[in-house]
Image 1: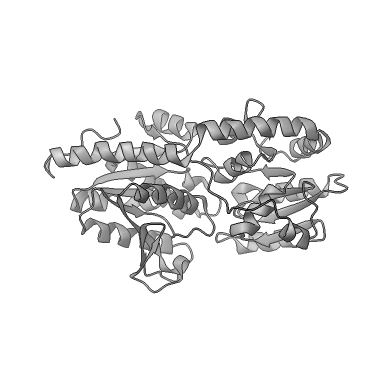
Image 2: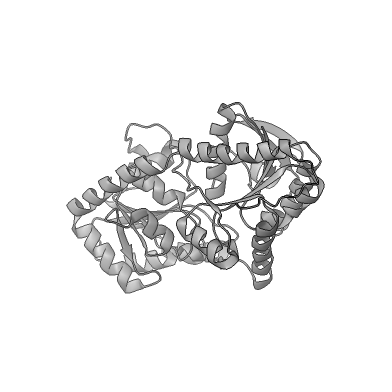
Length: 388
């Protein structure tokens, strides 16, 4: 099959759950003999517009970027949808709701089957203006109206689409991204003045909906003694927000910016506790990665986190509640044996239920069914089978 991918900044992935998701998914799919073109943004891949390069078997086609911080994603998705419509693909797969605003283009101009994966209700993210949120919400509606299949990555998202649109999306959860091989090296950890297993880690974009400032405030009020707090990640159009966080930087509160390779794997594997206090998530890769590595997890009690670390696989606190976060931090840090037991259960749960082999298999099953429909019908026969 020939597959086009739209809505991804680019690969190799630097920061962003969707980028890491697509890097792992399509690496596996190309290994099975399928052709994948991923339409990327030149400001992310750092190459000239219309340049091409191969990454893990995927052809990455970089389209020109425009100097608009938040408009670039929409313009890039529009051009990608138009360019892909002029080529002969079996599947055109849109990732995220914003880019899906343009899935009507290949629906109108191409015979390819249209797939949309919703990684989260992005119109709810606080970084967007009211106007931008309304546009992304329109992308959700466009996806429902035009996609042959809609995929969701969490049970909570599946319930949302069932209730709101009386439809049954395909549930395919994500899986933890692969880390670099390492032998529990702590050289980078030591260089930051950190003691292995005695620091808390936050990994992700420093954006308001992930609530890093709540964790920062809780840690400052905690009698932490030997413990330190590390923020790994950078902004996503939220530089002012990050600047406010950096004002608290000291010898016990450390910001590393984006990490990759062995530095990333080592700082996660040596952590004593992973915390994600988000108000909004799809199905967070970073939590799955911490669970796979056997790191105790404390997270807000939003539905995606309940799906992952409920049933004694981690600890949940009341989302947005500072006192609840402080109380649960104190409890987890004071009960290391219980935390390790939960972390072991979480590790076994991830190994049994979340693998890229399973994710790629289920995506390919869906692609294959759609491709067979494409071969058995004329371009004008419609798409009455959508979402079934």
